[in-house]
Length: 137
Length: 404
Image (cartoon, each protein chain N blue to C red):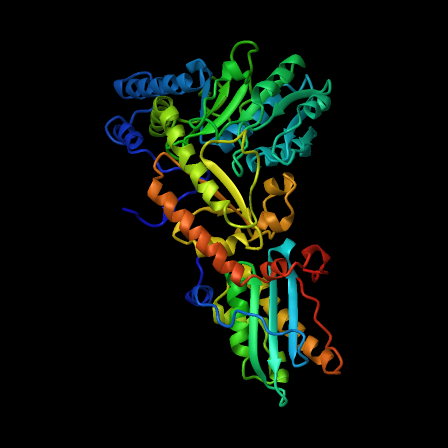
């Protein structure tokens, strides 16, 4: 299977690889996937007092498409408000990276990671947790 | 000088040796006859070429030329051996013994046998990838007609104790078939010394052409027969109908001749390169060889690089053609069943790369592979959350991973 140029670009030059201090109250961390499945994504957001995501970092264990999906997600998250971030749909990632059908689960995982990070932030800041969609991949 | 990409996936297929191509060329054009045409020179030339190939092949595996049945490749040979024995010996029994690490061509044929009323025992393997001889013997019943155990495994290169298996088969009057696709042409295979009754192999794994293979079927002590799986002109002593693939057969013959001449020298050179590659890659922290290193083909090394996913790693070494036990290389999302049969956890199976060297591999290519695999593992670990947790001393088994 050939990778799209965008996947290759994110793989070769991943944006925002790293770690934010998960102990901080304004940092939300999402850890999704499982080693047994061959994909684990950790996505973190840092939110300012205006509910704007000022920083986003990821680390991913997975194939090129999984790495690219999470790298792209961090790019999209920066500058968005927390509410806007919730509207990122996995199919947007599929479209942007031209993922083939067997790699759609990578985009689903990235969407889960975003929601999971936002939830972590919400709970830390006394907001009710959002209901997480049950993912199937 | 290096040319890219570098091919280190020789368990999947090998490049054809130019000398094999040269031997085949005349049979595409001038010498195009049908080996079954008995009434003119075109047919005679073709038949002579086929007979010569039979001799080249039988000389490599120490059998009679009459015991070679030409097929389209190892998958067909596996099917013919297993289904052919099952039908031919139906009055004697319906039980076959095989192992969980066999190639799909054997496993799926056995599944078919089960669907049509046969019984199949799938022996497990130990952490080294070897079957347990005691378990094998205990699995034999009065209904057992065939033991089907591969000579050497395609993913990890582990060589089964063939002589011991055949001795058990003989003791119980059971036929012994071995899928020797990865072994023939790479290590000495001798059907007499090894006590093999049926043996499958193919041309393209030993520097020969694709689309041609053979099934060795013993004619004496005991005389073995298989029921044909294709109806037609009764070629190959009635066991495999179909006009002979003369060019392919000539190529397979030549490949066998070269293997016989050059195996010892090739093995010395290739295994030294493989050992160097493996030794260097094992200097990477948390990397492990999969399968027995003692009972192993000389050109194969299967290594897991923990906390790095195999397909992601292959993308990082895109100038090097290798394969991985990672699920992402298949559509099923299931990692290699062979590695799992060896007892590897799913995450280690996902993290594996298989290196297969060849007669044409150079030291320079091995150097390149060593440097670039090291670099890619290190780069991917920098972005692996699992590596970070490992470094922080977090037990990954203590984490409740999301349903996936």
